[in-house]
Amino acid sequence: MKHTQMPIHVIGLGVNQVAHLDEAAQAVLTSLSAHDVVLGTPRQHETIAHYAHLARREDLPKLSMLKEAFINWQSEGAKKVVVLASGDPLYYGIGAWLMRTFSFENLKFHPNVSSIQMACHRLGLSLQDVQVVSLHGRPLASLRRHLQSNKTLVLLTDQYSQPKHIAEECVQAGLDQSEITVCEALGYPQEKVSAFIAESFTDGDEFETELEFDPLNVVVLKTSQQASFYPSSVGIPDTAFVTDKGDGKGMITKREVRLAILSYMDIQQGDTVWDIGAGCGGVSVEMAYWHPRSQIIAIEHHPDRLACLTANQEGFGVMQNLSIVAGRAPEVLVDLLADSKKYNGKPNKVFIGGSDGELNALMTQVWELLPAGGSLMVSAVTEETKCQVMQFAQQRDEAQDADEQSLQVSIAKGERLAGQRLFRPSLPVTLYHFRKYTASTSAINTNHKENAQ
Image 1 (cartoon, rainbow, N blue to C red):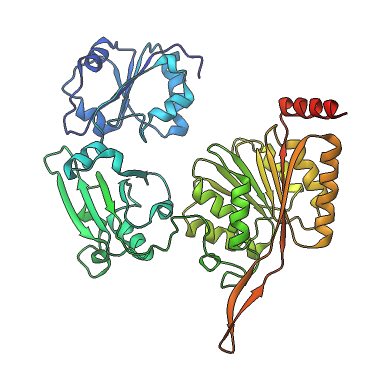
Image 2 (image 1 turned 90 degrees about the horizontal axis):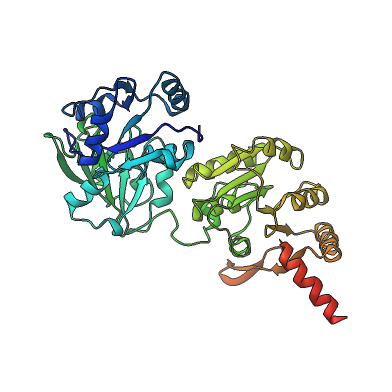
């Protein structure tokens, strides 16, 4: 569809019962012929009823059907399509889908005031001081990664994220004194702005039904100063995770080792990261939690650990950028690569926390997949595993295709025994990090070696 030459005008309607369009947007509507199309929801069509146009009125279908609809309209003689949108089509609006689907040269945007802006102005909030979170069409649990103390969140909601649901999430997070302001039907005659404390939604029958609030609402959430269950800095406590042995024990990378892994992995926006042998998900959940614009794929085959991993994914609200793949590596990697669209293609960073006896094959296969500049990190506890990683390191030395770093993390935690303090050591963990050289880096290293000779 990106090759189509049909102009598409995306008109933001603002936040009013009757749309107020600028002269450019009005001129677009006036220019439409009977073969052209105006696309929107029934409510959006009503807001522009006072602007005359000759085009066909079409109701907005599901996005999965929209691409084919554009093809049909063009084949039927449409020369222009107008898409009616929210106030700002490129801010949590349909504009992002249109940009992915069509060439920018065929798109013209006419923005208007958004419900987010209107809510902030109603409450005297500076937009740069708030964080906007869309729950529209997204799991309610995705709010959890944002529920830290002393934050102001502007929430775009749907039927599954109404004020009562948001209040319940706040209470669960330990933030029951948070203030929830519901901005209903902004710009309409029935507009209403109401403020409540989160715990009041769960105290009685007053707020039992979601029907008390207009479906068209924006929620402004000011979280309290209370300590939140959800972390605001790296190094989530082990006991916060669901594990196969309970109380933060079992197959989970411990907090202090996790901190080292996160540092060496150095995840950047847009990275695709595989966590092979993810166990209960300590590493993959924490990577996904702190890097929402990176894609984390956690691979695990043990049923009990998979159940824990899924529970932790939901518990920390990282459903949007953490994918769980049930299977044993390296066999499952073939299927993962085959469904590249779903899993964002090949990885550029990989962590191997468990290999189930397949470490040699895994390291070789992953190294071939990694692009120049990509990195592989391996965790080893047993001497046999360390030996295999050292053999791989020797291969990298011979090929001169990697920068290697390694460290051993030994942790002893303070406990009490018979009323006395002592430090109980854990098994030391050795971490190996390999970064794949780029072509220019390889050339520099070769020159250095020749000069040294």
